[in-house]
Length: 177
Image 1 (cartoon, rainbow, N blue to C red):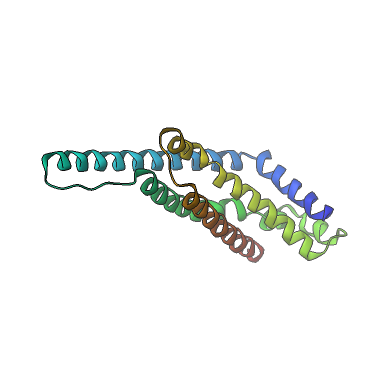
Image 2 (cartoon, one colour):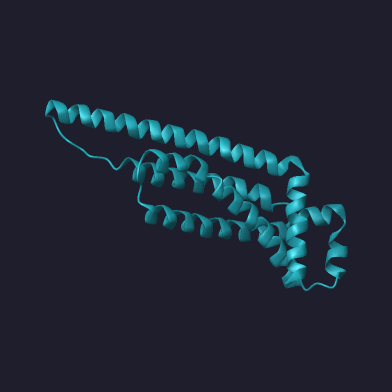
C-alpha cells in the first residue's frame, strides 16, 4: 500500500510541477462558472416570465429553480469532464515512455498492479479535485435558496463514478500510446 501512495504522490506532484494542472483547473473552473451563470440567468428569466404570465391570468408555472439549475449544471459538467479528463490521463504512462523512466518504474520492486493503481488513484484524485471545485458555484444555491440535498449528492456521486470510468479509459489509452 505504501508503494501505491508513493506513486500517487509522485504523479500528483508531477501534475502541479508543470502548468498543465493549473491550466486545466483554471479552465475547468472558468467554463463551469460561465455555464452556471448562464443557466442561473436563463432559469431566473423563465421564472420571471412565468410569474408575469400568472399575474396576467394567462397561466401559472412554478419552477423549482435550484433543481433545474443543479440538473443542467451537473449534466454540463459531465460533458466538460469528457473533454478534460483525457488531458490529465493521457500522460500517465506515455510520459514515462517518452522520458525513458518506464524501465526504471517497471524494474523497481513494485508489482504491475501497484503501478497501475498508483497511476489510477493519481488521475482519480485530480479528477475528484475538479469535481469538488464545482461546489464553489453550487454554494450560491445554498446561500440564496434551499435546494434538496439528496438529488444533488446523488448527481455528484454519479459524476464521480462517471469521472472514474473516464480516468480508467484514459489510463488504458495511455498504456497503448
